[in-house]
Image (cartoon, rainbow, N blue to C red):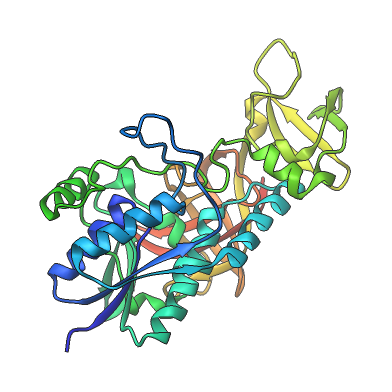
Length: 362
């Protein structure tokens, strides 16, 4: 009997090809679409033009269902709107706290590798799979997560929070491919999503107006306060910490005569601190609520650490302060170490683990 695998199908080309490849490899594949209650913007008048806003709209569900039919696999759409609403609430709450959230990591942890696992258990599936660009490997027979073959598409950063015990049940069928190869597979399989655009937005903020959403969810994050220079001078007023993030340059409402950036946010006293670029540089960080995918050494160890999705992993010394807290000291100063973002540790291509940045350190 073929091993059963539940594939999270978003209606995009990546997860569609992942399902198709697993079918070709002889697995008993079940497609699962996660309804989140988030809808795409209304379709444009031209029926030949698609306005793609995320990965969980009704149009995406229709695409996923059509692909499943084409592949001849069972398909189910389950309602996770309540759970997803909690992720949106986390997003707004982090901005209220003066932090910058990463909802895609949280969604992976709680839904794609949380609820997906629950469903797989319920139907007796051996494996779970997604269309993420990352790879699985084994070292001394232990499953490990490593970066994708195509570094420009690598998504291992957003998978650091997966429970270690799940690595042996995961399938990541497209991690060894680049995007062009994925689209070529889709065409070969006759899938209608072969040329579907990637979703690059946060799906619940399709217009990219984060401040609007935060204002709706956390109006208390929009109280007037002071904009203060790092040297102590009051430069002006802001209308709420909910519209700022570390490293931000535009939209500050301050005419300083030269570039200035948000260097820190003190939500407690409702103050936004700004300064020149040098003030954004930090030697290290402390991260909390860590998750490790391999055994970590006792005492300091050398690694590379990535502090945001598009950041190049930087050489650093990492030390576990306790079971869920790490201290990182970089070999070279890093720009805009941002509380609320993930700090992910790599040993070469392999993901050691990571945590949530609590603060930058000197």
